[in-house]
Image 1 (cartoon, rainbow, N blue to C red):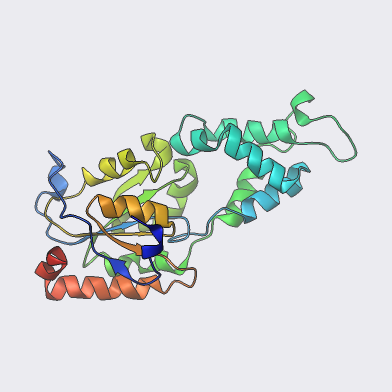
Image 2: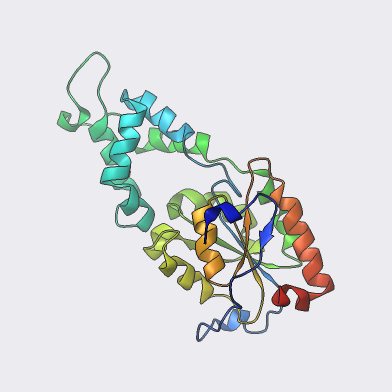
Length: 249
């Protein structure tokens, strides 16, 4: 599907009706609520790019574009898929660092140049909740809410913890071993959802929406201004008033 089809605040109905994915957890067997599946970055919390990389490049005195290019080439997929740990990421940054006034990379130093504690502080400055996060308690009465995100699990679980009672399944790429838009990640999430109920997936990436659409989900592109939350509210109201209409779209 051409990504151009996805527009902000417009829900795109699924390509095909959802099919049963085999056995499902007993927790969901009696659920008749619609399923709301949300990304984190750009949906419930701020995206790390570009601000995180700006702070990192300043901290370790490395050109931002070069640092990000090295990250994408050397460890990016591994970090999101869990084959590269958080601790290894901090170590990788220290090896990239260059001390002020010196040409010796931190890889040649015996002690960490910045260290994990400082990197986590920079991360915390960038990973901030968006207004939609506070709407989860309102939406939970009308939908089962789940998370499907490309992220490092240890980074986002503290952000979600105050809202854990509002959430069903939390599927994070680093814990599963796949990342969006890999179809394996969507299949993993789909197996956790009750059969026969409509699913609305909200993400800020058209390529991720395209994969979810092919899996039989309704999809909605999150906009930077958060107007997508009004569309979710309307969709949930329609589901409560006439649930059959969503399955017929």
